[in-house]
Structure formats: structure tokens, C-alpha cells
Image 1 (cartoon, rainbow, N blue to C red):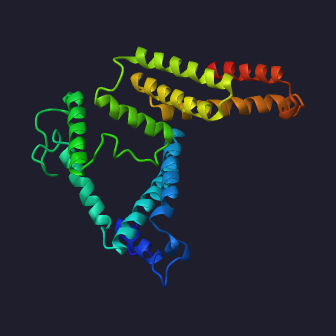
Image 2: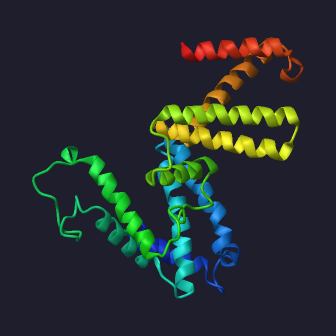
Image 3: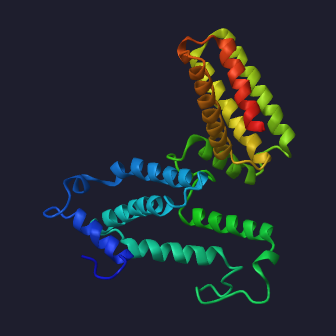
Length: 276
């Protein structure tokens, strides 16, 4: 029975404590640990992104709740081991964001406010520079040995590649404009073609990876998120392929036995309909 009309964050944390209780809790939840939850966290984050992309805002509270539940899980693990609890997470986050936003909280505390300048009139380039400088200071405080130290290995490969190249670019390891990045794409494609002709599987894999990384660099120079671009391509492919399937079925054939020329014609029809 609810103590009030709506459950609160405190109720959610109590729920987690009960689920993890060795005597009264859920066997599955009791068996979980730091590493076992990570795949679920990544999955829930992708489901949030998917709901937003589909503009399924009616699903979003549930998906955001599932993602929040992952954070509560980690906070419970930390509490059980005497490392930290959820309130520490909130405190560290709030403190960090206040420090990183001196243009919003000029006196360095949550109650302070910028006066006389609307958000739209703030120099965003300077804000970005200060943000990166603050993050660099935080990395130095953690005794980071490299600019790349705190880029998570668990990120999707395209996203991680983008972060790696962006971080290196801030140190001057970059082309002056997109033309250099485009030339690098052509260079990597040519090297991949050489390895394909030679039939060296391991080298092909390495060169294909280099080509993909070069494409990510090009996307950065064009101010395009490669992860979102590829997801968009996936959605378009899915839509067109479903149209091809429908067209083949309407002709009384099975897609597996349809000749390539017919499939290509249906594919071009699907693209035309999409454009129209």
C-alpha cells in the first residue's frame, strides 16, 4: 500500500534495499553484482535513446525509470560495501555541475545566479572552453596519465571512436578542415582494397577498422554524430527492406527465391517512394 498518492525517490531506494535483502529479497536481485548489472545498464540507455528517436514519449517515463533503477542498483552496491550511497552520488554530481557552470552559478553555490545576461547572449564558445578546462583539471586531479584515460571502454564503438578523436584533436592532433579527413578516408579505403585483393583476413579487419575510424573523424569535422547517422541509416534500410518484402509478397513470390534484378528494382521503388 502506498504511503502517499505517488511513490518517491526514497521509496525507490527502500524498494532496492528490500530486493537485495538476503532473507526477504528476490533471489535474482540478491545474486547481482557490479559486473552483472553493466550489460543491463547499457541496454536500458539504448532503450531510452530508441524511445526518444521514435518520439514515443508515452514510453519514456518507463524507460527513464528503468535507467534510473540501474543507478539505484550501483548506489545500493556501494552502500552495502560502505563505499558510498545514493545521496553521495547526488552530492558529487551537483557539486561537479556547479563547478563546471561558473557562468550560471558565479559565486560557486546553488543559490547564486548570473545577473543581467540572458542565456541566449552567453558566449557558448567560451563556455565550451571552460567546460573542457574544468574536465582537464579533474582528470589531472585523478592523476590521469593521458588525455584518453577516462573514455569508457564500454561505449558503443562509434561513440568511443568519436570521443577518442575529439580528445586527440584538442591536443592539436587533427587536420585543419574536413578535406584532410576526407583524404584519409580515401587512403584507408585504398589500403582496405589492397588487403581484400591479397586475401589477408586479419589485415582486412584492421584496415576496415581504420576506415571506420577515419569516417568517424570525417563526421566530427562535418559536425555529424556518427552513431546517430548510422542509426538513421539503419532505420531507412529497415523501412525500405520491409517495402521490398511487401512488394515481393504482393507478386506471389518468396523473397529468398526472387532474382537480384527484381529485388533491386523493388529497392529503387522503395527509395523513390521514400523521397516522395
